[in-house]
Length: 265
Ligand SMILES: Nc1ncnc2c1ncn2[C@@H]1O[C@H](COP(=O)(O)OP(=O)(O)OP(=O)(O)O)[C@@H](O)[C@H]1O
Ligand SMILES: [Mg+2]
Image (cartoon, rainbow, N blue to C red; front, side, top):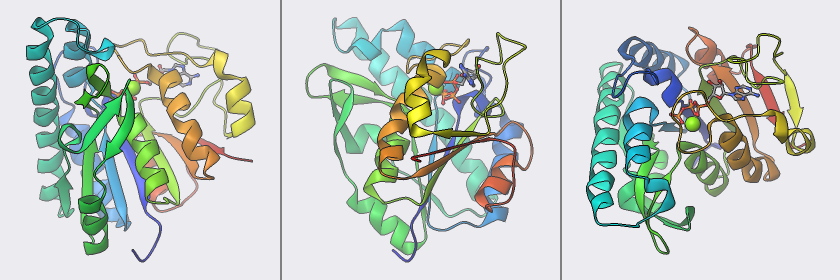
């Protein structure tokens, strides 16, 4: 690979309406596909979240706890199917904007152990990157060697892929301007933090909360916890509001943008 890849996550909070079951935000998906094409960053790995496609079904069947009863089997199939539907919409937009994107379904290349990635098939992804293709992964229902199955968050994937491929940076696109002193959706006085060190992140974790919407992988708190291993590998992370036009574009182009920079030190 010529250069270190960028790992970009499009939050489920952006590409779907998390308050309405299985409802995609097609305008946002279209706009982001165009921003990704215009920014023309390579190598690039894309990951997207589950939003109102993945989380509600995973919650209904209690999948995050692993296999407990046969009735959950259908939930596993359904969760994965819902994710492929959302992924289909993302892929359609990417291809219509000439992004050479290729799906890599996590349920087919990842096995977790107690919810943590135990093995991940990296060779095809590496070859895609070498070829200039853009691998697209997503939060998914996956097989788990201890619990039968698990919910693998897009956030855990982002961190793992960034470490495995020695990424230069991670960009997390969500529905708020970055990391705030408190959840901005429930506290009007919450302030945007422009820069956070790994030490500060670890010590101030108690102020970061989950999500107002259904999120079986811990909302912002889960996201920050997943990020820690990547930060320890010195991979800089930028959290931006992907619901606002051009924030992701500017982040990809390394231009000045409103958001939160999180780095080792
Ligand atoms: N301190 C904080 N700063 C910023 N956001 C916070 C904070 N605490 C909680 N949040 C909430 O976290 C939410 C983002 O997490 P959420 O998991 O819902 O989004 P996502 O990761 O984009 O979605 P998905 O998991 O479907 O990909 C924000 O909408 C915000 O309300
Ligand atoms: Mg989430």
